[in-house]
Amino acid sequence: MAAVARAAGVSPTTVSHAFSGTRTVAPETRERVLQAAAVLGYAPNRVARGLRLRRTGVIGLASDRIATTPFAGRIIEGAQEVAREHGLLLVVADSGGDDQHESRLLRSFVDQRVDGILLARMFHQVVAEPRDLAGVPSVLVDAVPEPGWRVPAIAPDEVGVAVTAVERLLAAGHRRIAAATTVDDSPATRGRAAGFGLALERAGLDPKAALVAESTSDAAGGRAAGRRLLDRPPGDRPTAVFCFNDQMAMGVYQVAAALGLDIPGDLSVIGVDDLDLVAAALDPGLTTVALPHREMGRWGMATLLGLIEDRTAPAADPVLLECELIERGSVGSP
Image 1 (cartoon, one colour):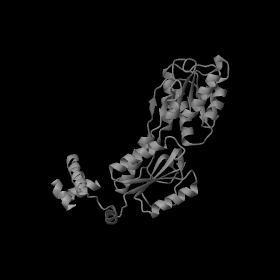
Image 2 (cartoon, rainbow, N blue to C red):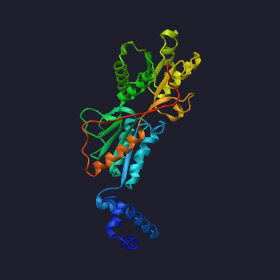
Image 3 (cartoon, rainbow, N blue to C red):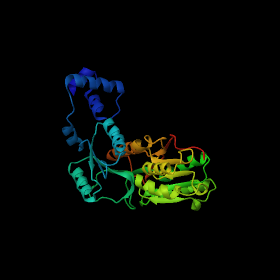
Image 4 (cartoon, one colour):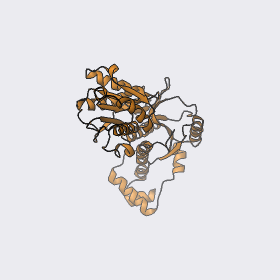
């Protein structure tokens, strides 16, 4: 470190701060230090530093269905960006939705002395407090804690998701707006149902008179719900459908095609997720409300680092993020 300091024309303390990030170092000074270190072949001894600070520089991320969820990478990417900015290693583990396996993963993280744990879910849900965290600083991502568990948490504003979608349909002139929703009991289902009704009420429409069809939250469920909503006389058929997610919207597209309905000429459709493999691939492209997975990952990691540094107190309530409307071609005038 002293040799690097001499080569860079700074003090050994500045070299230490440039590598650790514990103090602010001017960008040009940090770059000069890093270049000098590269020339001299110097790298900080993380094991020794970890023993001194009682930290390992490792963060664990445990989730339920990373391998099978298309947007899981966005959460990981957001968390990884912040970890990299602070010179930390992010270790990701997938429980496959098995609670016992997740308990073993969390115990393994604790045994390996990770500095903190991100407990992420691949869809918005309520999480019970694990007994295996053993006091390690922790943050929930895309989930909310059960009552009585005080832990920082972030999730999408599900009510706002539906309000944004339905207000877009209302702005296009639609008044016969239906919903294709899921049978799953989750904060997402309840929040979007509440937002659907709220947006209709604000427009002077009766939510109880709106057509709602429930099914599974996949393309097959979208087809089942779409058939119940659309296979009816023109005067009784909705002119627009708000779908719980993009996969259900794909099923509604398929039913519309089978019935000879043009999108958006005869029917407007709007989804939720901004799932690239679906929303951008449909013809016309699906207008949808994007869930902020990357932003949730970044917030979760930044908040966790604040806990580790004793700079952040656990929030009393979960943070609910606004979600962005992505315009494509599936919404038109009735």
